[in-house]
Length: 337
Ligand code: ATP
Ligand code: MG
Ligand code: FE
Image (cartoon, protein in one colour):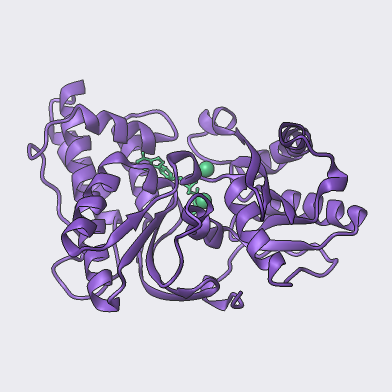
């Protein structure tokens, strides 16, 4: 089955074709970063309009790269939520209409299930049960995955998501939007241990997170510092170490608590080199295994939507002919596959 995947939940237009026999055939991504940069954050109306402009050309390009025409598609998957409602509507309307015209089934995919399943895209041997750490711009969750579609929330952030904390911390130290990856690369040249920030909520049991206080700690340290580039890098390193260590402590607890032997990491912060190394080390100590998507599939992309959609379409699930999106959508409410 060949499935076209469409991602338009936020500020990235992603398209891909996944073939259930041959794997990923092509994928393309257009990022709106430059469009939103002057506002210091995503402007929803501009995001929707840019998806309208870019989606069809990107779909044509992706199909051409796969050597396919639209008539070769057996199904269409689009992100139906969670995300920005206008942005979601663009992908959902285009995806649903295309499926209608081709007379093939369509499915609305949960964006976070897309992230969660991305590591399976390149590792067909990877199967539940496992524990998933979802660390993105809008979510920080630990999820127990008994089977595909059977998700139990173990813990989540009570305030900022880890990616959001990276972005906001970068901004308050004057880094250009979007600051997260920028802050991470700055941390590479920072010296460890010069600035020590707390590991929030690790001093009590449980698997919830809280990252908003960390940002305030960084602000105070930054304001009291000499604000040289070297100091900024040292603070970035201290911040990154605090986030990475906090995530690692909770992942370790989640593995212990569930008895799972596999940890799956997904979402934009999963691209962080230090996080990847730290979780690798932790899993090694436990005799467990940790799996990440390639960095480009940690952040938003069409491939994860094509893949997640294909799994559900193969199981006979599909959306009806209406265009429906869910800006807020609990992953635990998804049907089993
Ligand atoms: P959600 O998936 O929760 O709806 P989103 O789609 O905006 O949110 P993603 O695209 O998965 O989030 O990831 C983007 C986030 O990942 C941003 O907050 C960004 O700062 C962060 N990020 C990307 N690369 C890195 C990195 N190397 N280190 C730390 N954070 C990173
Ligand atoms: Mg984005
Ligand atoms: Fe995302």
